[in-house]
Length: 333
Image 1 (cartoon, rainbow, N blue to C red):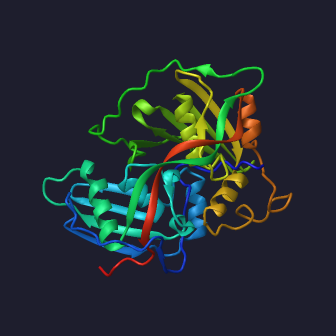
Image 2 (image 1 turned 45 degrees about the vertical axis):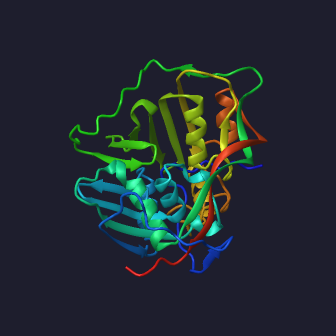
């Protein structure tokens, strides 16, 4: 089994032709009882500039984004899978539906009503998806194939964190090189460092830093304070489980320092698996060992082994948002 390590903040993407998915047939939608956007424009995202996307990935910038400022909410290059996750305050891997949910991309620009805050955005987005895409879905606990994150033979080789993460101050002015990103789990402050790396400050959830090495075609990820549950969650969203959810089964508590090096080619391969039409080699030509050459960095298995951890296939009952019906083409603006 090959495990691929993508990027959390860049996983899942792109476009496909439109048809309707109906399983079972939709039921009549009542008028939304909660808050709604005053107005919204929904358009299919244009095909991305691949050269620019690769350059952005190399500096830790993801193609998709959510930006909420004042009365304006903007969702750029977001898959329906990501939009549904945001609307339900879930994670993208918790959405169960047709495969095209992760490939069809949309740009949404919406105006919020007076008095609304960013906390109202998920409910307003859900109402928009129900109206424009005829979305119906329900929550369920389902037994699914997963990868268990367990302690390897010989015990863990993790270093306890010396930090106590503090809550993120959303009102603090942004410094040069900083930006804010809204996620269903809460805000993240992105900090562009002088060495070319990007730090993701998640407040009490900890921090991690990504740095690409163009010469070795590898990316270094380092976290200063993460729980094993948070580490498993991060690995899932980074693509480290070949699309399967990674569940913490280590029974380890506390916060730990973690560092992982993995190959840029594995990252690109993971993105291709999720729908991005990336070239088969790195910028400038194919890798020396062919398109499957992992470049620098380690495989997920080798990287985890250094931490005294490993992944094993198993099954677990996990929370899911099950999509009953959704249209590929939204109604007209």
